[in-house]
Image (cartoon, rainbow, N blue to C red; front, side, top):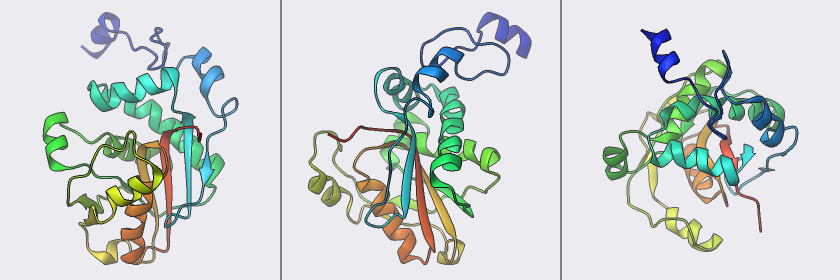
Length: 215
């Protein structure tokens, strides 16, 4: 049945839509065009996270792929995007972690969409990094959409929007990796990291599928 489904609905590259060969997740042309060796991602330190990296630039076909994962139920895109994130961890973060977690979404969005794209990415990273995944945070109040907000407005928008949803001892003394889809100003990641550091996390690193270029 699985082989028949593949014959009827062959896997396609999430970036350009071309038919993929066996064991491929992104076609060779797109790997050459957009992956790390030709488009180095941003790596930076935040107010509360120790380091953040991304695997791709958030533009063109990459933007379309992430929108597909986030808004059009293309959950199959999570694995190839996570593979790029794992590569960014290896090449750019360059330090081990004890635990993977993810940026939570609010309950209304979760009910409407049926999944949290950041959680899908985090859970795909488990087998790639050989590190367990644990939900550590929950969103405790609604926030405005981040698009169009200035950096200081973004920081104010997420302040106090997250709280710990696991026992503090689950993160205390641990090196925690937060997964998310897009790195823009880092305000959301920083607020999540603040809560993890408050709970006693030793270090908080972040990895995203893509990063917006700084203007």
